[in-house]
Length: 122
Image 1 (tube, helix red, strand yellow):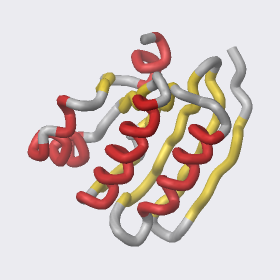
Image 2: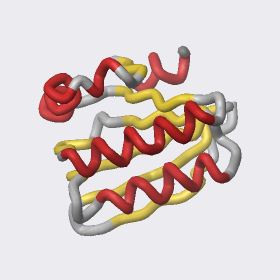
Image 3: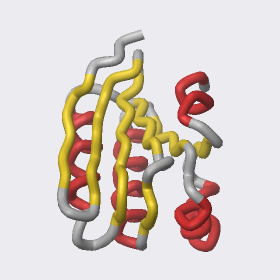
């Protein structure tokens, strides 16, 4: 299993780390995902797709907040990954973030896992 860190980005309210886990790119946003920080997540996700990763795992265990802009970033990347034969898996959502996905129905279009280990084992 390859566990190399690919990169990271940070602003005051959001930090994003990216690493390779076997055939998956694991992207871990920590903090608040909103209009002001969305590009900090969009850019590494799109970069992973550009590098040939079709399976993206977003470890949401440290994501404290997600608004509609953040949700749209994930939906856009999901569309692009699926059009390339892959997908986006979400793991470890905190209750406040999970609620946004439930209210909007987005939880039905993503593969959602309770833990990162579950997502990587799928």
